[in-house]
Length: 235
Image (cartoon, rainbow, N blue to C red; front, side, top):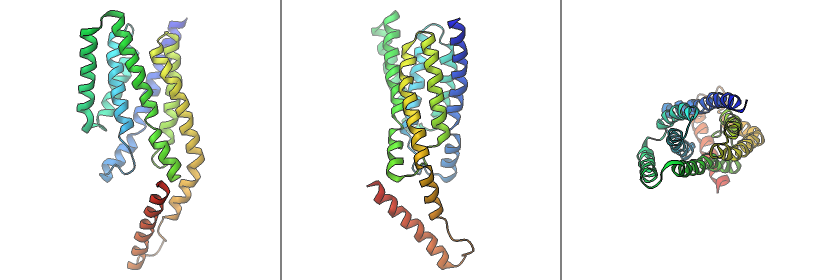
């Protein structure tokens, strides 16, 4: 019964993780369109890429790792598009870990070592958004912390926890406890500051029907003042 349930949660984990990896696509499109990263940070994506690469290596070492191989292959492909500048660092770090564990550890010991490394970086994936949460608290704006992504991350953590628990792989289950906690925190933070963000956006909108040069100047001045307010809040 347990293996069957594990397969169910493994499939659900693949589906939810697929949605998690697709959730930032509108953000990527926005960055490409404006040719600016604005307030978005690359650190969470870089850590997610490295974690996906590590779990791929771990999945090839352990038995019945197909559920991990499928989703982390897709996830690694998606994250590559956001981390081109640090891709070399990720590849070299993974290569170093692979070489060291291949030559200096064997059998079950190698699986345990790689499992611990995966667990550590999986925790780092969930901790990385702390910088975004800090920015939300300081600016009282949730513009750069999409609710959909936080929701899918929380659901993803729950599903993968049960998958790891059912197959008794605590290198998978344990980090997702922290993932669930941080996911809930992000969603609560979004609900707290959502209204503040809406009010701020309304304040910086230009007055309708004002097409004169003075109106344009006022529009730019409002933007400038808004930037000044943001700087004061952040500091």
